[in-house]
Amino acid sequence: MTIEIWQFVLYLILALVVGLVAGFFICRAIVNKQMRDNPPVNEKMIRAMFLQMGRKPSEAQIKAVMNSMKNNK
Image (tube, rainbow, N blue to C red; front, side):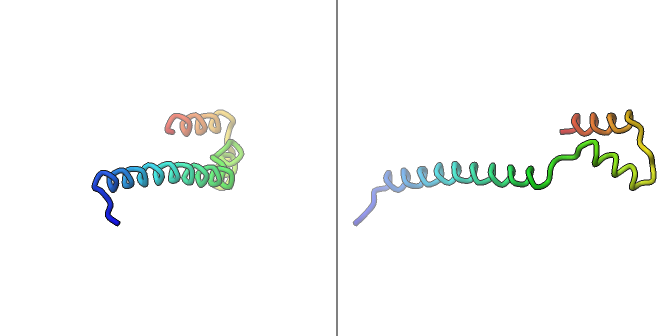
Protein backbone atom coordinates (compact mmCIF):
# COMPACT_ATOMS: atom_id res chain seq x y z
CA MET A 1 0.00 0.00 0.00
CA THR A 2 1.68 3.18 -1.19
CA ILE A 3 0.52 6.74 -0.95
CA GLU A 4 0.92 9.22 -3.74
CA ILE A 5 2.74 12.49 -3.12
CA TRP A 6 -0.37 14.58 -3.83
CA GLN A 7 -2.35 12.50 -1.32
CA PHE A 8 0.33 13.05 1.32
CA VAL A 9 0.30 16.80 0.72
CA LEU A 10 -3.51 16.84 0.84
CA TYR A 11 -3.56 14.92 4.14
CA LEU A 12 -0.88 17.20 5.56
CA ILE A 13 -2.83 20.35 4.66
CA LEU A 14 -6.07 18.83 5.96
CA ALA A 15 -4.42 17.91 9.28
CA LEU A 16 -2.99 21.43 9.56
CA VAL A 17 -6.40 23.05 8.98
CA VAL A 18 -8.12 20.73 11.47
CA GLY A 19 -5.40 21.46 14.05
CA LEU A 20 -5.73 25.23 13.57
CA VAL A 21 -9.52 25.14 13.94
CA ALA A 22 -9.33 22.92 17.03
CA GLY A 23 -6.60 25.13 18.52
CA PHE A 24 -8.68 28.25 17.95
CA PHE A 25 -11.70 26.86 19.79
CA ILE A 26 -9.59 25.43 22.63
CA CYS A 27 -7.78 28.76 23.12
CA ARG A 28 -11.07 30.66 23.04
CA ALA A 29 -12.50 28.40 25.75
CA ILE A 30 -9.40 28.84 27.90
CA VAL A 31 -9.47 32.65 27.56
CA ASN A 32 -13.19 32.77 28.41
CA LYS A 33 -12.57 30.63 31.51
CA GLN A 34 -9.70 32.90 32.59
CA MET A 35 -11.87 36.01 32.14
CA ARG A 36 -14.61 34.42 34.26
CA ASP A 37 -12.16 33.39 37.01
CA ASN A 38 -10.10 36.62 36.94
CA PRO A 39 -12.28 39.53 35.84
CA PRO A 40 -10.62 42.69 34.55
CA VAL A 41 -9.88 45.55 36.94
CA ASN A 42 -12.89 47.60 37.99
CA GLU A 43 -13.38 50.76 40.05
CA LYS A 44 -13.76 48.80 43.30
CA MET A 45 -10.33 47.20 42.80
CA ILE A 46 -8.71 50.56 42.01
CA ARG A 47 -10.22 52.04 45.16
CA ALA A 48 -8.82 49.12 47.20
CA MET A 49 -5.35 49.61 45.69
CA PHE A 50 -5.37 53.31 46.58
CA LEU A 51 -6.45 52.48 50.14
CA GLN A 52 -3.65 49.89 50.46
CA MET A 53 -1.17 52.60 49.50
CA GLY A 54 -2.56 54.75 52.31
CA ARG A 55 -4.36 57.24 50.10
CA LYS A 56 -8.01 58.18 50.02
CA PRO A 57 -8.85 58.37 46.32
CA SER A 58 -11.19 60.95 44.90
CA GLU A 59 -13.72 59.96 42.27
CA ALA A 60 -11.75 61.96 39.68
CA GLN A 61 -8.60 59.94 40.40
CA ILE A 62 -10.48 56.66 40.03
CA LYS A 63 -12.03 57.80 36.75
CA ALA A 64 -8.60 58.95 35.50
CA VAL A 65 -7.07 55.55 36.26
CA MET A 66 -9.98 53.74 34.57
CA ASN A 67 -9.70 55.95 31.48
CA SER A 68 -5.94 55.45 31.25
CA MET A 69 -6.42 51.67 31.49
CA LYS A 70 -9.09 51.72 28.78
CA ASN A 71 -6.90 53.83 26.50
CA ASN A 72 -3.91 51.51 26.89
CA LYS A 73 -5.75 48.34 25.80
